Image (spheres, rainbow, N blue to C red):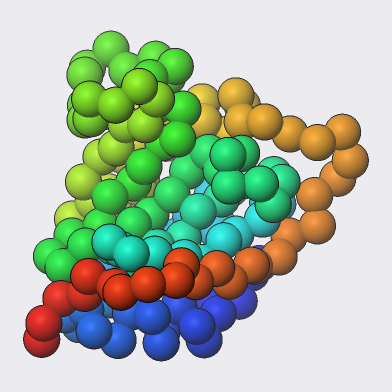
Length: 148
C-alpha cells in the first residue's frame, strides 16, 4: 500500500479541515481499491489532487481526485467511454466525467465501484508490471486556494 505523502498534507493546508479529511480518506480508500499503479500528487493551479495510472504519463491517468474548497470529485479521465446507464457521471467535456464525493463511503456504492472497475479495465497499460509509487508534481504560477 502506498503511504500518504507528506506533500499532500502540505498542499492541502489552505483547505478547510473537512475537505482535507475527505480527500485524504478518499485517497486512502482508492489506494485499497485499485490494483498496483502509479499515484501522482498534484499541486495544480485550480486544485490539489491525486491521480492514478499505470504509467507516469499524465495522459494515461484514468482516475483522479481533485479537491475544491467544499468538496472532492471522483474524476474519470476516459469517462465518456464508461457504461453509465443511470447517467450519474457529470461533465460536458470531450472525455472527462466526474462524480461529486461527499463521504469516503460514497466509494463503496456498487454503482461507483463498477465505474472504477471499468476505468481500471480500460486504462492504458504498459506490458510490464507496474511498480507502485508516488510522484509529486507542482505546477508553476499562482494557485487558487480557499481562504480559511
